[in-house]
Length: 149
Image (tube, rainbow, N blue to C red; front, side):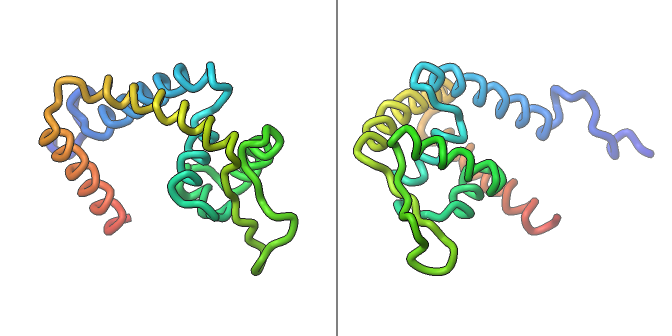
C-alpha cells in the first residue's frame, strides 16, 4: 500500500478534524442547554418543530439524527413537560403530528439563542463569505458521500 493510500497524520485528515469539530460543538451545546434542562436531541426536536410544525416522529428522528425509538422517548419527555403536543389519535395512518405549545415556543426561543451564541463563537474570525464557503464545502461533502455509499 502506498503512503498516499493511507490516512496519514490524523490532524491532517478531514474526517478526523470534522469529527473533532462535531464533538467540540456537541460539548458546547450540551453546556448551554443544560441550564435549560434540555439535551441536544430535545433541542433539535424543538427547533425542527418551531420551523416545521406537524412533523411526525419519523421526520423528527431523521432531522435530529436519532432513531425513531429515541425520538419517541424525546417526544414523550417534551410532552410530559408541556412543551410539545400530539393528537391522541392519528389523523391519517399512524403518524401523530407534533406541534410546540406556547411554553415550547418560549423554551425554544431561549434554547435557540443559546445555541446561536455557540455557533457565533465557533465561527468567530470567519467572514460571512468564509462561513458560506464552509457551508457550501460541507454540503458538497455530504452530497459526495450520499452519491457514493
